[in-house]
Image (cartoon, rainbow over all chains, first blue to last red; front, side, top):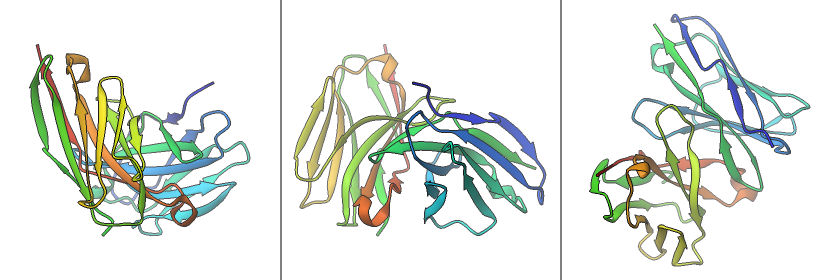
Length: 110
Length: 115
């Protein structure tokens, strides 16, 4: 059974650019959630995908968007990057409600 | 009402001692309370979880105590070890039928266990 894998692990962007982060779900998990973790804080829920549809969203603007593919892998896209978007982005796959997190993608916006 | 409060922010405990982290919530719709452990450079990992119909749950050296009337819950780590040094997050989730898998995390407690 493979775990949740995320790519890239680290990346640096400049303000105004766009970024795509990728996540491969744990085998058998059909639900994927994305969280943003700022330095020294707890993860904040961005949104969740179930069977390729967004079925829940946290308090994040529309420039945060996502996709889920038929193999349950997922992407997080962030447009018009702002300095405050610098954070660790965590993907979590789940089945029956228990979250399994990947190691995250560390985004730095300059 | 969606907030989960957590204290202390940081904690230093001697090896063999008891580590205690406290959390509180307001939303009575929460019905699942997990604790996550996060090591530097890693994602959070589920440590132990409890539902509000139970007042205590123990798994090895880790115990959750839950006080539904006070809307408080706590994690006790018995016989703390240097390998327990990590950041601990309490969390809460409302009924999955109404809130899917959205988990609200506390701000975290950085635990250092010194030899």
